[in-house]
Image (cartoon, rainbow, N blue to C red; front, side, top):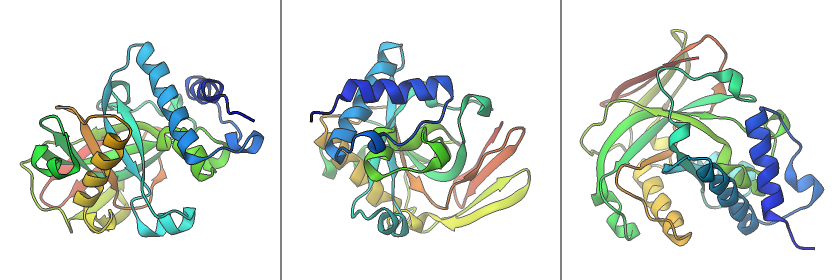
Length: 248
């Protein structure tokens, strides 16, 4: 039986727009990861037709523990658009069950034509955050489901950009309303977020997508994600990169 990629994309897109959790897509009809990425692209293309523009790439499953949990041996990735950029606040009522996590962000300064080219193409690094929002009920999914769902991407923000530097083991703290919610190190991101950056280039180029000047690469989470409540103040700090803040 052939999989209707556009129908699955419409289901996911509708769930996000209606702020409505849905059952896992694979419950009705199993499909593989390659099909899942086709669904992901179809969802993004629907958003582009509504006027959104690609703004970067986000990485997922960048901790060895998460890979083991999901039974995979490689990272996953999704696409960022300009509509996902958070301002000083994020309206969580427009999300299903948002969670927030601390990130290392890379700013692409010129077109990336190869994996070997990506590190020299970085124009800046920053501390960031990502707001995740699985469209699936109970934040529960299989690998193909989460890939199709654009790796649970919802919103993201970054702090001030700094010149590129070694970030292999930078301490990070996630605070909500002045209380520490998570602490960790950038080393949790594949041992060094630069590895995740290279993986982003590898996967994007393999899918026929070129990392463009001005795009952001979110290298992955340094800690577990935590629920993001309404009327909260979030602050993420990273040694050497300062802080980024957002309210809900």
